[in-house]
Image (cartoon, rainbow, N blue to C red; front, side, top):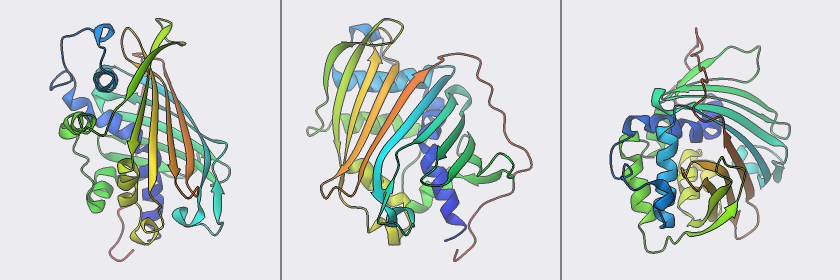
Length: 274
C-alpha cells in the first residue's frame, strides 16, 4: 500500500483538473452542443450542463482553489482523530482541447507541497521542487476502483444525473466579477453519490470509515457565456466528522497557458501486493 498511497493522493488532488481536461475529445458534439445562446437558457439543469460545456470549449482557463474544514484522520491514514484542512490551497491551468493540466497544491497540516501535470489520463507528480517527477496513470487508479472515467461518456452521465427527479437545482441572478458583471447563481444538493465515488477511490480499509456524506454545489456562471466564475463545493456528514469546503475561482480564459510534459519520469505503478 505504501507505493499506492502517494498515487491516490495525487489522483485525488488533480482529478478534478484531469476530468476537465480529458473531456476535450467531446468538445462541440453531443447533447450539450445546443444552438440556444447561453444568455437565453432558463433551466438551471441546462445552465450546469452549458457551464461544463463552456470549460470543454475553452482554449485554456486558470483555477485558484482553497480548502477549509476537517476530515477524520483515519481517512488520510494519519494518527490524529481529526485533520484540519484550513490553509490548504491549490492553483492550476487547464488546456481542455489539448487534454493537459498543470497544478500545485500546498497544505501545512498535511505536509503537502505537490506539483502535478496531466496529459489525458497520464499524471506526473512530485512532492517538492527538487524531487524527481513520478509518472503514473489516473485511468488505472479509476479502473482499479471500478469508477467509470471514460471521457467519451462523461457528458452523457452528467446530463443523466441532472435529469433525475430527486436532483432539483435552483437559480437566481446575482452581481459578480464576471466580464458581464452578472452571474447565474445555481445551487444543487448533489446527495451522497459524489462521496460514494470518492469512497471507491480510497483503499478498502479506509473507505469503510467514510461516513455518509452529502455534497452541496454552488456555482456562479457568467450570465452571457455561462462560463464558471466562482464554485463552492461543500461535503458534510451527519455525524460532523466530515465538514469540507472547497472554493474555486476561474480566470485567464483562452490565454496562452503553456503546459510542458516533465521528462525522464520513473513509473509509479504499484507492485503486486503493495
